[in-house]
Image 1 (cartoon, rainbow, N blue to C red):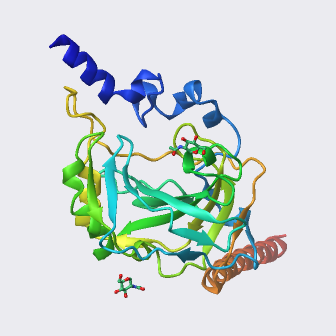
Image 2 (image 1 turned 180 degrees about the horizontal axis):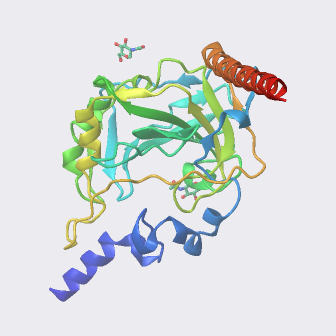
Length: 322
Ligand SMILES: *[C@@H]1O[C@H](CO)[C@@H](O)[C@H](O)[C@H]1NC(C)=O
Ligand SMILES: *[C@@H]1O[C@H](CO)[C@@H](O)[C@H](O)[C@H]1NC(C)=O
């Protein structure tokens, strides 16, 4: 009996055995990650905040081309709870073109807030955090055999980031969200039918941010060529709540249940990096800027003329009195 329990423990806690436990909160939270994973305290870290002043428009950034993203329903994908996120496995036949190398798909996963706080994206736009974020992880298959070989190489990975906001119901997300209750505990997995993965992405694949960064979870390898789409996709509040309330980061045999929420990393230092944008800031933004500037100028001039008027008036009265 004791032997049986011992074996169960060894089998079901493979991660804790190598001393690499990490969480988003508490004693193993973000500030401590670099103790076990030195890259987390290093350079070229992700996510970052996309500050308008730090963007550089690059007209050579072409639309992202998704190849073989339309999967047949015959194909089985593994949906799993790894204690840090919900992950869907992707076949390496799916790939990206139009990047410096051929990048093959490996998996997609999510980062989200809690049910009370629907702000859990990792990247932010000018300080704005979205409800959630999806990452489609690809590896450089022109150079490496598999993702484990590529994960720590500077040209190893390409990740597509998609902002998720709460709004309209999204049928594509329901292809796997409807099974999410079946993977409540850390380590659980099930099979779901393939579908067109393209439907999870925003309509416009030509507008995105591009920069060199890292994995947003330990070991934080600085191996990612990031593409984060400018436009978010929407899911309904019900769908968001399914994501934010269904999962636990604890194993079934653990006494304490730990909800899997708030699994996002804070924005990291830019250091010397530049973020390229495939699009120019819209005229709308510029015209509002111009209007604001005009109002400032006009009120400035107004105040100045009032002061001048008062001065003249007082001066006249003073000269009259003397
Ligand atoms: C995806 O593939 C299915 C059949 O496997 C087909 O019916 C459907 O039209 C395809 N969708 C797109 C957008 O190509
Ligand atoms: C990845 O490829 C390397 C080298 O070909 C191999 O040794 C390793 O077992 C592979 N890993 C996985 C998880 O397939």
